[in-house]
Amino acid sequence: MAQTGARAKARAERERLAAAAAESRAAREAKEAARRARRKRLLGWVPARRSRPASALAERRRRNVRILVVVLLLLNALVYLVTEDVGTTVFAAIASVLVAPVVYTLLFRR
Image 1: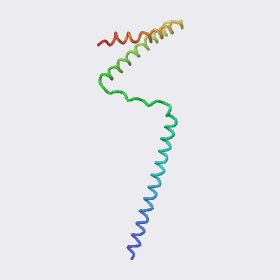
Image 2 (image 1 turned 60 degrees about the horizontal axis):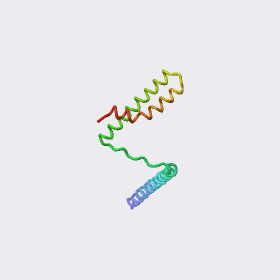
Image 3 (image 1 turned 135 degrees about the vertical axis):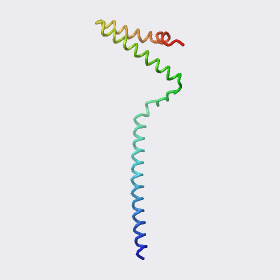
Image 4 (image 1 turned 45 degrees about the horizontal axis):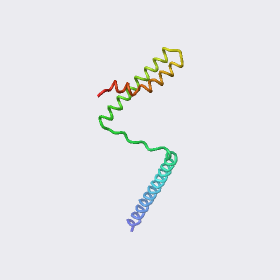
């Protein structure tokens, strides 16, 4: 008879622990659902990011564009440091944007 009382107590303890675990799991899931809803409400108007292609060609194109941007930024920085005229600096920035496709073609010809 003493064993059945001990078994009943052990079972009651296991059930209490399971109920506590289920309660904490439900609270965690509710918190996560609220976080997802808040995020969706905040970022719902922003279009989703497209995944970038992982091909070697796309990676090379991204590298080439980065190189071109760095070169143009360095040239614009050099113009900014060498000249004191604001108009020349603005003209160089606009010209670099307009000339970028031509420079890309000349630098990275296939």
